[in-house]
Amino acid sequence: MKEKATQICIAVLVGAIICTIGISAEDKPREKKVDSKYFVHDETEPLPPVVAPGKTDDQPPADAIVLFNGKDTLAWCDGKGQDTKWIINDTGEMECIKKSGYIQTRKEFGSCQLHVEWATPTDVKGSSQGRGNSGVFLMGTYEVQVLDSYDNITYADGQAAAIYGQKKPLVNVSRGPGQWQSYDIVFHRPIFKGKTNEVVRPAMITVFHNGVLVQDHWEIKGVTWHKKQSAYRYHADKMPIQLQDHGNPIRYRNIWVREIPEIITR
Ligand code: MG
Image 1 (cartoon, rainbow, N blue to C red):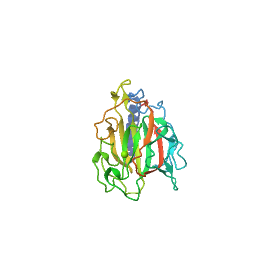
Image 2: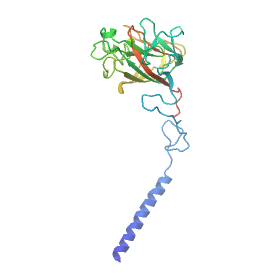
Image 3: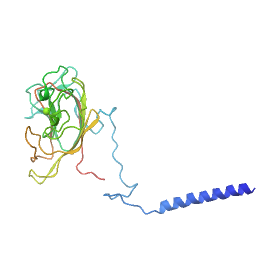
Image 4: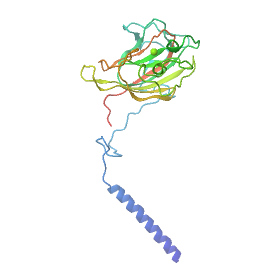
């Protein structure tokens, strides 16, 4: 009997403690999140938009703009706005034709998330910068180098996944010649002071090469130039994305982009 009374007392005590904790949690003043008009766990904060993902992570999500999916090159033109001379080969890949010039998107982009897949020639020719050279130019201005960097020595800031002439990749994660490789790029455009060459916010870039982080939110120093220290030159808020013709038959496939809103509600 005495033992049962003790058990009841313990149960009542535990219940009282739980009850007390519950009340104190409810009574705790709500705190605002840092740099936000919302409280922590605020149920009035709007939920993010629902976006259907791709079937696999390399496939475009529902809100992406597909730039190339093997069917046509309608999203692209040459530097003068004319139809590109790059071809779609028998296996549905877009291939650079020597001396056809850069190609660029007809639509213009600023800050964006960009997925690009590319392959250098299986038949290895040339060396250093002459071997499988192309490039992805954000805003037609800032190059993420495309190069066959598998067992191919060149200068560090000119190998695959380098910000050309400015920043070598963190690692060389290149696949061999002819194999498909991917870039997943997060790019924030520069913001200029009026229409001057001075930036109030430099461009920032993050790059994953074959799924591996190779550029970590790095501050771009300016326009991509050859053998010259970089600097910013004023340009519009949105510009075409370009792919480089460097004289090598580089192939591209599965290219899609998502625009990043300039104003982000926290
Ligand atoms: Mg290049």
